[in-house]
Image 1 (cartoon, helix red, strand yellow):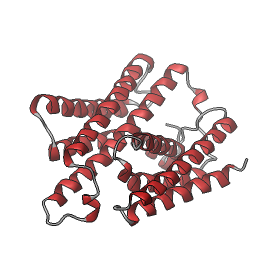
Image 2 (spheres, rainbow, N blue to C red; image 1 turned 135 degrees about the horizontal axis):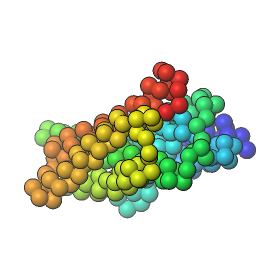
Image 3 (cartoon, helix red, strand yellow; image 1 turned 90 degrees about the vertical axis):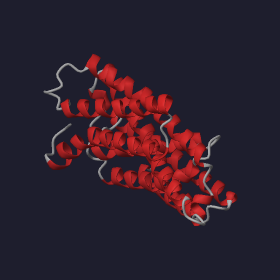
Amino acid sequence: MNATAIATLSICAYLISTLLIIKDFDQRRLQRSALYLGWTAATTHLLYTGLLFQQNNGFNFSFFSTGSLIAMIVVWLLLIASLNKPVEMLGSAIFPIAAGMLALELNFSHQIQSLSHYTWEMSVHILSSIIAFSLLNIAALQAILLALQEQQLKRHPPKRFIQSLPPLQTMESLLFQMVGAGILFLTLSLASGFLFIEDLFAQHLVHKTVLSILAWIIFTGLLTGRRLYGWRGQTAVKWTLIGFILLLLAYFGSKLVLELILHRSS
């Protein structure tokens, strides 16, 4: 089976689906077609990842392959959520990112860092970190969409895109659900890291740990503020984006510097 052809099909499906989503937000039939293409893209992306897994005897955790894997997980989480939640609009941002990361992986797939090099304990830590980042990635995009919706609703009339979104209260509820799910996996990631990583300094993980803990504090503080003080709106958006930026720096900052600039394994 030609892995390159499968990846190319996935990229095309992602991009066409994106165009269908943004073309006309009012036509539910068009959105359904976009989601069908989204499922096709996600399935072929998963198939491509599976072929590489078989070829490399494990997941490839180089910079671009990690980005592609996270993007794929984000897409699958979005598509599964869209079965009973009105989150399909997020596909207009997530699908082109997934297409771009898959294209980069396709061109840099020769850089291999296999998960088989790690113990099962480290594998749990890495995979829980990836899932946490994926969930909180969706939360960050939801926060941006929520901020745009709140801003546009103050205008008369709001843009057609905003009118097609669910009510503001529903959007906020979805945001906090996503943050809550992300916090569970981030907690698992941090706990497994403290239990299984012996030398943070030798493994260049100090800044990752510090930034991840700060992100955990931010997200936990947001959920606490929501429960105790009823935080919402711009407060929720700002805290979510700050937490996600910290995670982005923790997860990808070092890989970017070590692999692409210093040409070393992270």
